[in-house]
Each structure stands twice: as structure tokens, then as C-alpha cells.
Image (cartoon, rainbow, N blue to C red; front, top):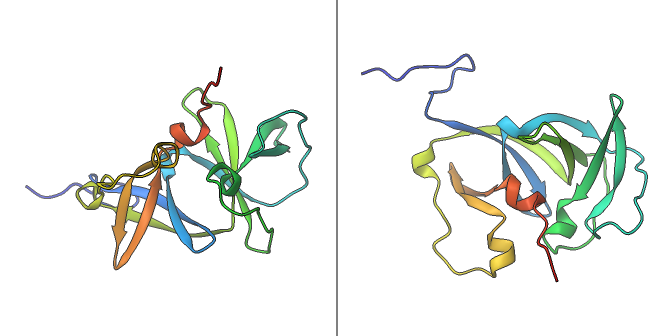
Length: 156
């Protein structure tokens, strides 16, 4: 049986990810969540929010909270440059959130059979952010679990 092609020319069983960089690491974000990619802009700080929430922006009349993925992952602080972007994610409940990334690189098509679950023991909090590891040519891309990244752990 022939593989069916969708409108974008990829086979139906492939998944598309936007590859972004944080430092030297590459991360993949499932393209089905991506609403928009915007340049860095002035943010309004929100008092007493989590340290990784850096503020909010007004995007087409909607207030969108912005999260620093670097701070969320426990990496060094953001350094904004010309390639810095905000990836606007639309969640299943139609709300939006923005992720600050160092650079947006490309869109890749990954066959789900080439995506592996991490088979090694990571510290539990950071490991929960990964949906898997994708292989693109000779490179490995850490695929993010968007829901785990935005989910708040309730502490008592």
C-alpha cells in the first residue's frame, strides 16, 4: 500500500517539530501547538509570579504570559540577542503562553519510529519535560512535552 501524503508533502505518519536552540542544545516543539513566532518585545512584569515567568505581552489584544525556558530548565539566565524569539503556544483549552528561546532553527519531519523515550535515569523534574529524543540526520533533538513544561507542581 502506498503511503498517503498530506498537503505539506510529508507522509501522514511523520510528525513535525519546530527546532529551537537554548544555548548549545536543540529542542523540538510539536508544531501542532505553535500559534505564532514573534520577535522579542517589551514585557510587563507580574509581581509574585514564578521566577521562570518573566512577564506578559499584548498579542493582538490578548494578554499572553511569557515563560523563560532557560529558567524553567534551570539553565543560566537569558541573554537576548537578534535571534531571540518568543514561540506562542496555543494550548488545548485555547489559552496561550509564550516561550522565550535563543533561536528558531527549522521545521523537521520526524518518523515516530525514530523517536526514543529516554532509557536513562534523569532527575525526575527535568526528565518529565521530555516526550522523547528525536534523530535528525546525525543530530539528536530533545522533544518537549508541552503540558509538562507548563504544568505547575503544587507544593504544600
